[in-house]
Image (tube, rainbow, N blue to C red; front, side):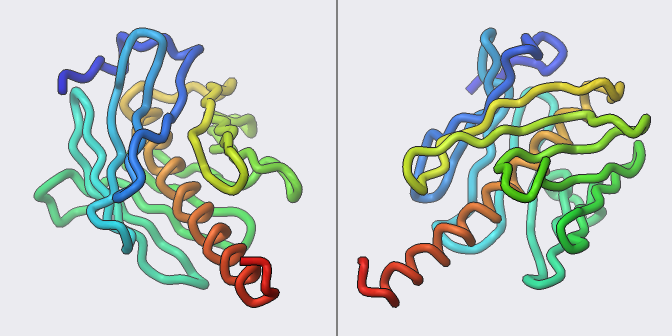
Length: 182
């Protein structure tokens, strides 16, 4: 598949769209085309692959109560980014800097990546049908972030949101079964 370079994207129309279930697959799209794909390696587990016009990364979560996510260029052992869970807020570290990451509010399903000036660099608003995660709309904030860095942040944030959503779905299904609603 030929991917649209991020620099050619209509950044006002960015969105993640679920395109597959087993394993979970989604595409980062703009009105001008597909920018990249995030695909889990298997139906279970946390290993995922992301690819686009100028990148091919692997993403992997470790830890449960203290989650950590690393992003590596395909074939490299050195991470290019880390996400470290810290309660309700998380920290993303890349070669370019450090970013806050977390939910926009306690009862709000949206997530934000905080930028360098106290504002936010990226806002992700997930969309669902019932409990099923369908995708997310992305909005760029006031913090200036280089295009390649923004693409990395959007992919890492979406990966983490998908994992968190799957955990919530599993808990809901277990609760339904336990309470006799399944």
